Image (cartoon, rainbow, N blue to C red):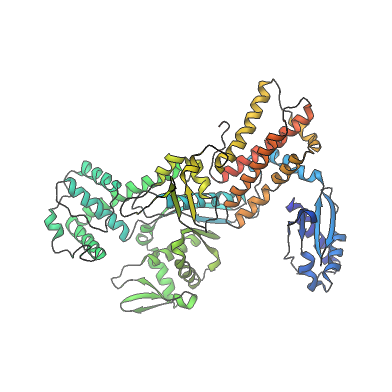
Length: 585
């Protein structure tokens, strides 16, 4: 209905421009919105207030001209002018009931819109370093990013989902060394495992795979490995010790041996991550390798493009980008003094590749601890001649897990963390995904495991799914009585749905297309979750107050049409969030 009223307003403003009341080229910055107070109407617009100056008229006088120019519509019962020039719309009862017809006619596409205009958008999310299993913190980014991508597709964007694989750099080297040292232990070497190494059980598993496949081909005496290494923590510097271990491993294993260990760790972890995400309902259109940027020269080309534009300089043997000239707090290193490009250089090349691949808009979903990285990346895009606004970064706060009222501690290096797989096995994918998007991604989330597993109305995902299952139960009861639903008869009799619970439910149902459009525009899947809870609540109240399977066939079919529209809306909303809609519970 909002879209219909917006169209009426646009036609009225166009007519006033034709009549010379509004000058050409004046765009209506105002829009139709739901009225804040239902006593004033169903929808309202401040168009007269916004355009009064351009028209040279008092706002209330312009409001009168706008109202007079509005086309007739059977969906509008009344139009009123209030206050200094607000225009309020009251809809005819039949207008609300159109939502029932629309939901049943559109089916799985009910609520889909065209706001995206078919533009290409790339959504890059999770992109965790493949140095360990995904944990519950990654799960929130996965649920948010995938739900956001679903929303954008429903709003008319052409969406490409991508995982950026950080398969080059120090963290992968640390994983390779960790695997090799555990392998040496399996060979019987008396290894002193480094404080900065990855210590989870998965490292042992990869090392065991290496030992089974290659025997002792990569064994080196521990005395030779540890020879003259700088001291580890707590007596020494743990990071300096690790860097020396990496260099020693490369030296002793040689290029082929090092590549073998490095590659195995990457392949095993990527396969684990991919399987965990697929089990979580997340699938990508592409997995983009950071290493490919170096191997095909993309990093070098990006750096040279910045150099050619005069935005780099040398200092202390390193190559720097003049990020401060584009709004960043300081300049950033692109190439270290040892000739190795930084992570930042790779990220610049990666985002340049996104533009070169034809994406009109880019959305990166990052952890909240990366907020300081945003200005430097936008600065690089500006220096490359790319509109910084084409990059949108959504920051996702960490999820804190509680079990039995106690906070669960987690640390990636120590291996003491709850994996996404463990969470999914404990509460299920549906509960995990719904709970992850219950709050705005920018807000901290306390994830209550006990509540997520509860089969009560206090559990929001159970409450919403139960509404869907209840409608299915009603339809089974209908069949058990030897009756069938006549959709056309029900749609023809929708005017008989005059009970207060019915009117409330219909009005909530009718908001669905607006919710999809708003949630997509605001990048806010939590709006869908909140709406579904509201719709489910209205349905459950209706279910308890009004019988559906009455003897009056026309009224029965009208009520069934309404609850079938509710079922379709719940199914569509849950699908956007990656949650199933069960028929039995």
